[in-house]
Image 1 (cartoon, one colour):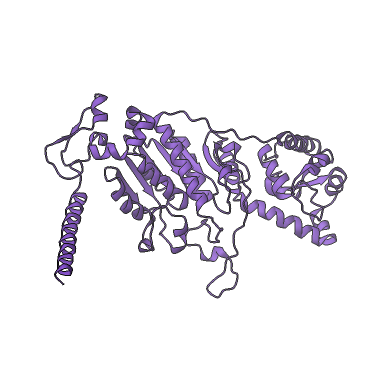
Image 2 (cartoon, helix red, strand yellow):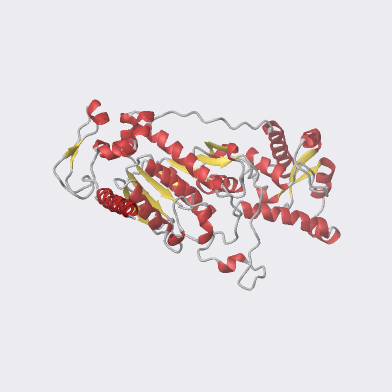
Length: 458
């Protein structure tokens, strides 16, 4: 009996000591670093900073001009300092980055920029955290559902790297908010928006202001992380969002490239799901739009892919800020010659038929989209729909692009692929004749062209 009492006494004493220790440690961890809010008149200088001759900083009630002089901060970023070197990490820590769009891609990009030691962040998003976004968001929990994405990130970020100066704006980017969001000379702007109109406006504004910008294209409906690339917007392929943005930038703003983008070479494995209203029946999604132009229908998303998109963006920006040159793997398209033939043939046909090629509104990249994505390398009159393969290149000498509606320009949403003889016949008929005599063919073609119109944001 006495032995049991002794054992219980030891256990009780141990529990008491453990609780006291836990409380003491919690108190120490909860106290803010002197460089943030508490002035204790002490200089914190890490050995790494000392060895490079950089000054320490006295606490003065404000965030230190050089957080790396604090021992805790320099230890937190020690792996980055070892990777970049202290001087290069100083550049990262002194930088200001704006992240617009804080969903699956933007939240991960912002999170890793914070963890990389970026000294100032502006987080912008008008939307709220939803339950369905928890499969891809970087930090949100169920407790955050219903709160602003921007404020949610700021709350979590302050416990990860409190030395970072974080601004959060619950606001939609548009022409009226451009100055508020893009002023202050940011070192980099991250475009993580999935709406075409807003994306185009932001990218055009960054080019006009001379700001460095990195844009994310579509990350939904994909599953292969090995096919994610960083390249110029002109080189992005298999992505409806980047195609539409590229077209609009060139048409509306005269911008023909020079913007780096993160994109996937993988063809999307799923499409937008049909929209169902409260009754469970399919309805017009535009009737439920809160913000005009923003997608209401849902695209299936494997959460890992937008997360990797965001990580790639953060890596690209961090290395750029640090001045580390990283040579990205080039995007190679071995089929370009075939599409150039189709493009040149279209120009020659337009000149022959209309006396000018001024109404040709497509480039080779858009011809790739028309040939591959819309017509699958086959004549529009072929009933069988097959993937593009060698059969296309065997038949390319007998295929050409012609206008569907002769009264409209030769645009992405008005070009069909036909054999030479079919093209001659098509030019001799009116759309009214085709609609009356071949209603099935008429519906099939107009449906495909409507898809192009939607994907390019016409």
